[in-house]
Length: 382
Ligand code: PLP
Image 1 (cartoon, protein in one colour):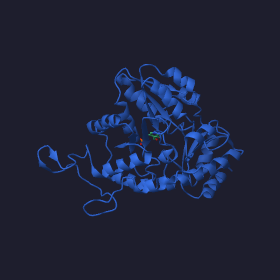
Image 2: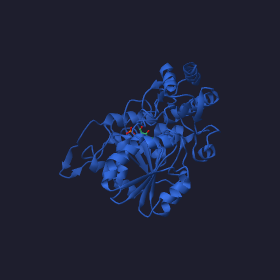
Image 3: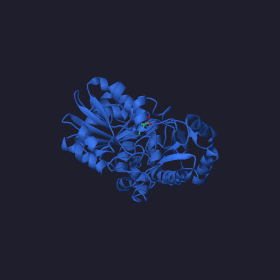
């Protein structure tokens, strides 16, 4: 599918105003923890870098623009961003979470935040009846990941948002897999969009970061206060690198998608592959939904190798271009074994029910030449 060509321009210019003193076209790295004040309690603009920093502010403005939001708030990691969102809630509140999320999200909710009186229930949201049954008067937040990690399921963001809003709950979409180039959750009815900026927004596997984008001013104020008061802010170098990466985001995403489509099509026809999960394939059970709510299918592909773990491990061991590593969204192609890597913290019975089995592999297709990626997979499968 084609991206909105406007994103090519927005990505380059978002938040990038020339620096007023020197005219530098890029916002400099303001490596400072504090700022002089003319008189007590009257800072010029900023007073302390946990509260605000110009390099971070430029990035946050850029993120708001690329996501079609009014505000962007950045954090030290994707999980720090998730924690800040949960800190909006009170003991007794309930969160309905889609069951096929990044393993670390479930771990944070089950093992860290669950003990503060907030109830998290994990639900298969591809079935909207199940979502409806899980929403109660105490539900304050519906947490969606779409496409899901690692099985690339698609959740109907518009329908889920309408259900959540009936009880006054917020809807958050973790948009890490799609990126703002391919999915616009706020336009579909969501209230908050979250990114592990470690992934596509960073794009070069060289940093850890997180961000939340919102349209509502009050929600922004609350989150901004948590960012300042709890303090999980990103460093200046990370902000600079993330802003630089934003300029090429639209270009990179087009190549990621092109490669993923080529790889998924190749794998689907391969006799050694049992099943491929990619929303861009017509065989994907929610291909039509993906086509209506996404502008492109992004660069992530999962598949079952025909065989057991030993066979799967053999395939991984033969790959030369695809690097075996956690994470995704970088310019280089990666392969991951969800059961033993990214989703090892998911309870075994839940992993089994979801289909995260020993023969499941997940690819993050980079921006290399598609033919090279396919020939690497081909020789490994042979
Ligand atoms: N959300 C998704 C979809 C992820 O894949 C990840 C990490 O892999 C996170 C959130 C957590 O982000 P981080 O690793 O930057 O803390």
